[in-house]
Every structure is written in structure tokens, then in C-alpha cells.
Image (tube, rainbow, N blue to C red; front, side, top):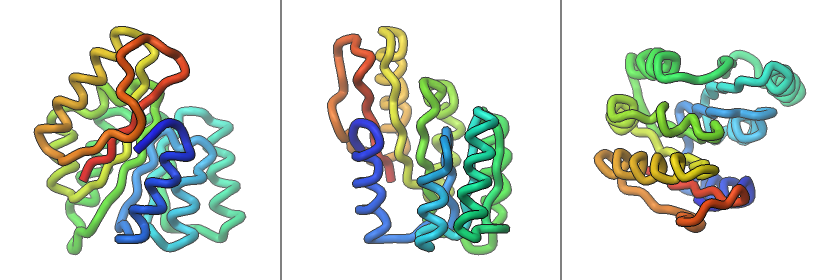
Length: 178
């Protein structure tokens, strides 16, 4: 994937040039630009927005309304394993399951969210994952390696950008998984 938003956008453009998504889960949705864009361009049929910040959730609603996108999304607060698993269970019961997408930028929460059970479920449900890893401390740097090891059990992945081995607040890394 890469560092920060430009790389994510570049990767998304490459992905949508080859496929569309039944469901997009935007974890750490900010103002909703990725999800709104995917819906507006019809690259995704449905979007699940997860955003902890209340004012950002209001921005998401405003952006959805401004783009006449009503009825093909759900909006939630902070994502956790229980909430994500519950929403995954709902789409698992879909009669026709196609490609699904997760874009995750949850400021370090990715290390606990993507446990073995969640990753296994995502693989079964045909998800492509874009995860921004936050390595702001030595502990998170170790957690990044453990997460990549868990990911490797279920997905082929690529790392875009650098996997940083020194402490640096300016650095991040995003793997894409399919």
C-alpha cells in the first residue's frame, strides 16, 4: 500500500480498475471520503463506516447526503472485534457473496482488532484488506510484526512503503491483502 493517503488512493484506483466490491468496511473513516467515493463511483454496493469521532461522523453524513447516497450505508462509532464480527456475520448470510474490502486506519487499534478469528473470517468472506500500520513506539513495532505474521496465515500480502525498523513518528506502513 504505502505511506499515508496518496498511496492508499493510488492503490484503491488500481483495485477498482480490476473489480468492484459488494461491501466496503471503512475503519477509521474520518470524514468518509474513501467510502463516499467508492459508493459514488459505484465501485462498492454498500459501505460500513466506523468512526470514533462524533464530528467526523456528522461530516460523513453530510458527505453522503451531498452525494445523494441514502440507504446503502451504515454508520457506527468506534470499531471493536465484537462489532466488526457482528457486521461480518450479517454479510456472511448474504445469498450471493462477492468481493469485499476493508480500509483500516485506526491509529494502532489494528493490532488487537485483527486477531486470528477475525482474519480467518475475512478470508472466508473474500475480503481484500488495506491496513495502515502505526508504529509509533517499540511496542507497536513489535505488534506490527506479529500482525503481519497472523496475516500471513490467511492472505497473500504486499507491503507498500517501508517497514520501518527505527522509532519514527513520521512513518507508517500499509499492507494490502487478498
